[in-house]
Amino acid sequence: MMGAGLWVATKKIDYTWRWKRVPQYFFYNAETMHNAPFDSRVAQIDNLGDTTRVILISEDDEKLSFEVDSPTLNVSVDEELFEDDHLGSTFQWRAGPLVVGLWNTLWISAAASIMGLIIGVITGLCRVSKNPTLRDLSVTYVEIFRGTPLLVQLFIFYFFLGTVLDIDRFVAGICALAIFAGAYVGEIIRAGIQSIPKGQMEAARSLGMNVPQAMIYIILPQAFKRTLPPLAGQFISLIKDSSLVSVIAINDLTKSGREVITSTFATFEIWFIVALLYLILTFTLSQVIAWVERRLAVSD
Amino acid sequence: MIKTVELKKIFSGRGQEVRAVDGVTSHIASGEVVVVIGPSGSGKSTYLRCLNGLETLSSGSIVIDGTDLADRKTDLNKVRREVGMVFQQFNLFPHKTVLENIILAQQVVRKRNRSDAEDKARQLLKKVGIAEKESVYPGHLSGGQQQRVAIARALAMDPKIMLFDEPTSALDPEMVGEVLDVMKQLAREGMTMVVVTHEMGFAREVADRVIFMDQGKLVEEGTPEHFFTEPREERAKAFLKQVL
Ligand SMILES: Nc1ncnc2c1ncn2[C@@H]1O[C@H](COP(=O)(O)OP(=O)(O)O)[C@@H](O)[C@H]1O
Ligand SMILES: [Mg+2]
Image: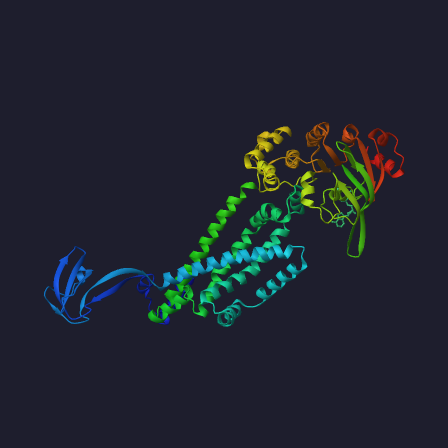
């Protein structure tokens, strides 16, 4: 029903779908043109099957050889050539902007997730520590980064810190995402630690373990298991939030999509494709986490 | 072996003060089995937890095997590995198998290698009678089995003293016996034990001495014969009338 409705609606606004134009923005067969570097003569042409070798001799007897794809051969033996005359081309498959963008989104999210997890675990531990300074610091951090929009944080990281400390836009983007996610992860980890019965820590201590040992071997593994579902949600959010780095001119999936649209005008198609690609990333992540959850459930 | 002098533990919070342990002085000799009894809330658990350094003392002193727990220089982790503790709620590590529960602290704290730790664990599991459950997770064991694993886990550290905080109170009645049997065997082997329990039969049979606590104070102590037949204190008489 809704699909049909939308179809009728797009008909009305006279939109022509150009799905055929989309694949080339994933991968395209890039043509490299081979031209004569100087005035010369074609000395020899050897057909090597798919490719053909062209050997040029210049006026001062300098020899130069080129290989081009046979069907594109544009010269014949003994032909006199001027500088920049076209000899032939070779073709190579290249990743298009959508694949490059997808890849950038993927590794930016992965790097930010790992950093965010580390920051979050440290924050969570500080939050439950006996030391009031550490506790206050972690509360302040969480409040600041949860209480301001990620977009604003990105601008501050890029325009202020990026300029002052002269850091790369990728570094700025990843750090902003990681620190933003770390605030949420910190709260998730804190809740996880506090949900473990006190007796676990006491049993560990009564066996002579110190607090770090008890945390590493007893509390955190159990807390991690319990916090896996909310952590999954957080990392899925992070993948989606990473689309905001396009505002600081990082070529992520969203920015690539926008660029492709300016050259194709296939606005609807590209946004659907971009959404689908994000969905594939998030869905894969949630499947991986569900698998880890099943693995950890053996002790239940 | 354990000397406590004028031990006090005061909890203060929300404007009120609870004197959980209020001036307990006692001496527990090596190889002695001491049973601590008393009504709920009388400070028995807190007393035991002080002996293990799980609570910091408000005042007084505890000297275990020559080491003063109140001394700031004392490494409590070192004390704790010499003092085993068994809890009412077992507190096994649910994410680790029975065997892993017993070898973890041996490896991490005692720095034993894996195979030595496993040998020790298997030997103790046999001793508490559940050798066949070594690769099971605690959640799949009965309460009695879990508590026996907990005892094995504490024994694996070769403690000089074992503390038991109501080890059978969370068990179904039919499982109490299997845990008490393990404890009796330990007592026969000469382990120094401090046991908080409501099992008067165990106290009568195994204890060298019975301590009766009420409102944080050590009200009366003596041999089981004395305590169960002719207690001096009114509070002790009243308590015994309830539980026997
Ligand atoms: N962590 C604590 N904070 C505040 N009060 C406590 C704490 N632990 C125990 N208490 C209080 O100390 C008293 C003695 O408790 P406890 O030692 O558990 O008694 P028992 O084990 O004899 O039942 C109780 O009144 C209890 O409420
Ligand atoms: Mg108690």
